[in-house]
Image 1 (cartoon, helix red, strand yellow):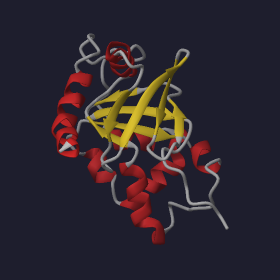
Image 2 (cartoon, helix red, strand yellow):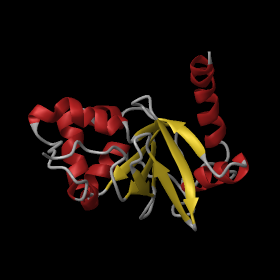
Image 3 (cartoon, helix red, strand yellow):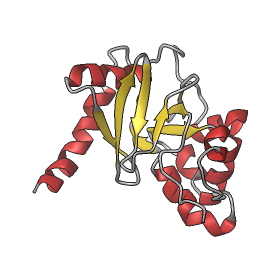
Length: 185
């Protein structure tokens, strides 16, 4: 019964979180959303070269060109190289794991850092959770002034750099992968 209740409440939590910003969904770093899409923004930013290749391999560029809105927690290139695995998510044989990796980094709705911070502050527990497109829950907390996202397997990342508000969502750069790669034997 609890599982069904969580499923029923998850869309409401995302909608209420998206409304928490109080500034019309605009971020502190950008006053108006770009006319670009999530896919175009990720493809244009040199910091996301590996992510761009993973998106292409997984066949998900079209999804991020679509209507949305989505929030993509986008790992920079360094996150892939320091992940502790030699898994090459850009290889053709890794198409399914690449898609799974990406779904674990995407949540429905356009969520700015102001929205996430306001939800953490108003929640009373210091933690909020959001369901990903991979059907897992990401937990968000504060570490001083930084926002930290933690995956169910314990993988943690800090929101870094400047968020990008775009036509169909928000790109939130992060400094680590939100899944723990399979250890290399």
